[in-house]
Amino acid sequence: MKTIILFLSLLVAGSTICFAQCDKKTVITTSKTDHLNANGALVRTVDEKAVVHINKSALTIIVNDEHTMKGTITSNVCDWKTPYKEGKTIIKAKLNDEQGEDRNITLTITGQDGKVMISFEMEGMPDDRLRVTVAKFEEEG
Image (cartoon, rainbow, N blue to C red; front, side):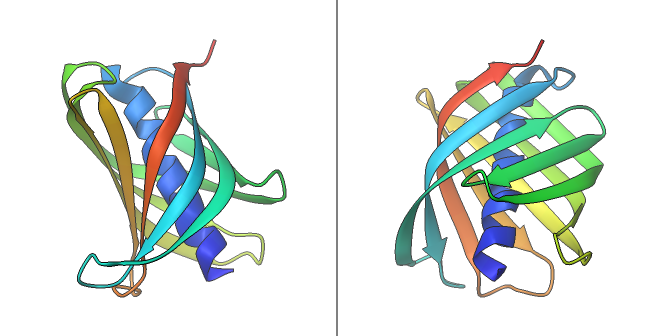
């Protein structure tokens, strides 16, 4: 469950990247999740699909078409020099998992040299961090 929550948060971060223009509805898709320790060292990699839907105030993360988390964005700092390629977004959100628990998360979406990465941290769990590479992001109509 912890893995799902972390992954979902990362997806949310990915959604924010699609948010490169900071005000658009976006969908982000990922295919694998790297689990990191507190020092940022890779612990393991899991192949799993995640889809994140994000708009100005809310996000939804769906992992492996089975687990869903929904949440409210509490803050969004967006600075992109080239949308979806060069820049950074930091999103803070409160997610509600399938057991009804609220989780405060921070998603950081970074674009460098055309490659977009998402990192995820959950409040109260500093030793469990996630990093995903965005496979696809697009504006949602």
